Length: 177
Image (cartoon, rainbow, N blue to C red; front, side):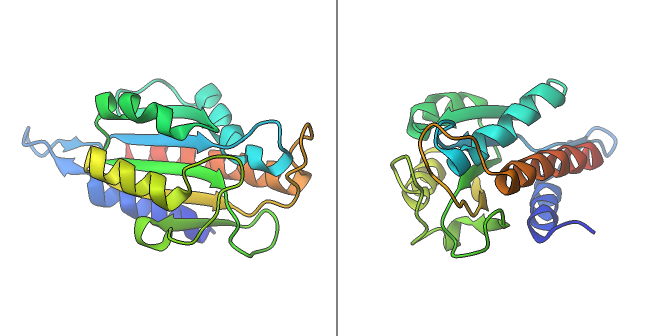
């Protein structure tokens, strides 16, 4: 059974599919997946782990952009602007007051008050900037971190969550194309 976040991503992508006019052909949405976090701070590496897996496994597509934005996601606004996405999915470790490794879909309107750990701006501020700048939908796939200790790998729980998220994203993309 798909997780709640994956159902929401699937619904979001399906809502963005457009008819191209060519004998009922469908135009797939342009989606940017932006991994955010510090790869050297244990569970904060969730976002980079997900996008690294996506980059290694997904075939190239003009409709998909995968970015490892690290701790400076604001530096990728030009790349996103040139890509012209319909949807930007930020993938980050965020404090949701949940169990470690818990993954959730967070709509733009629900980002206020969520804290990121190793980067500025906060998710709500970044999402607001991107939405205003790109005029597209913005959402977050967040994972609850445990340890943020420097120079440590992700916990087994968060690493397993990152793997599952990447696999589910690939399956969703395969089913809408």
